[in-house]
Length: 318
Image 1 (tube, rainbow, N blue to C red):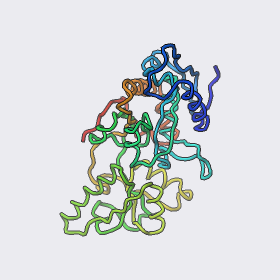
Image 2: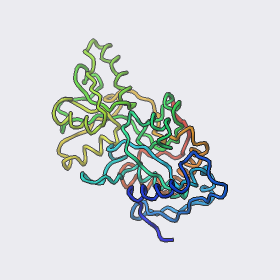
Image 3: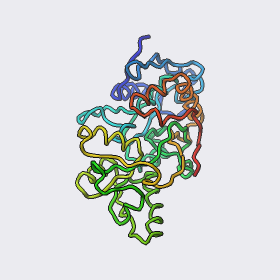
Image 4: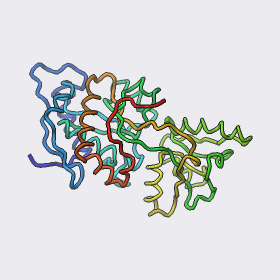
């Protein structure tokens, strides 16, 4: 069977057809239900992923019968998830490509749907989604809602105006100043913890402005409403390099500037109501790590350094 390139539109059409015939994931399939059949998938030019029958067998029967994993993601958050262009609703990015690769290896489809970040975990718990791929940090508190298959590791960073006019070199340089952050993220929690550093030096607290999307925080930075945006260093670097051809933003990274943080990895959040799914995803991800496909995806986005060698489960330190 020839390799194919999957687009979100095709995923949605195919998923709707399959779900109509077989029911939704989590329901009891008919006794004679057949596993979804799939061939090689061209994830990116030069990267085709083939299904592995042994790994396909690990997929829970309900998911195999439906042929689809419903994935929540917060768009845009480049380079992890973004639209192909300003007028397109087709999703691309690290998480999307990696999801297609995992799905191809398992012989099922990963169907991505946009969902605001702070509503993702409630939506999974409500049964709307089976998994999350949205640059989400694996945290102990979040493990009460989902199980994580860890797949990346990156620290926080500052996105600032070009040339860093505020001269942010250490965390306390933002004390008393307005900074942006996305609601519900680990970065918002870290910023709250930074307030203790301001207090210890008798400086006014950071004026934290939380936005529903990081793109809104970037707009606030452009307009001067905030002096910096606190996000992960990978996204900060990508935005700084690509926005207005690199003419608008700069980044400030490193522990003195962003403050201490634990090495909690990013994880694929998997619904606790889909027993066996996290093990299948973990096995498929590890196979992609082992054969080099995982590294090819990260390299395509110029971030091979955030890769990890082993797909672990619930590896958060705090």
